[in-house]
Length: 45
Image (cartoon, rainbow, N blue to C red; front, side):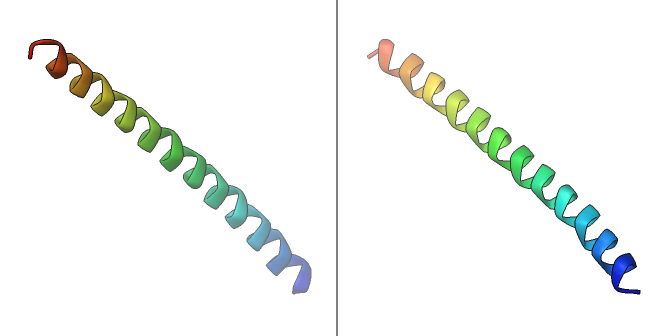
């Protein structure tokens, strides 16, 4: 039973790491888009 639990937790941690990586890249992309919009708006003033 311990081996099954270890295997399950290992799989779950891989999924969690993937989701954290995805959330970081999504946040970075959103931040970059916002900065581009801010800089573009600043050009017209």
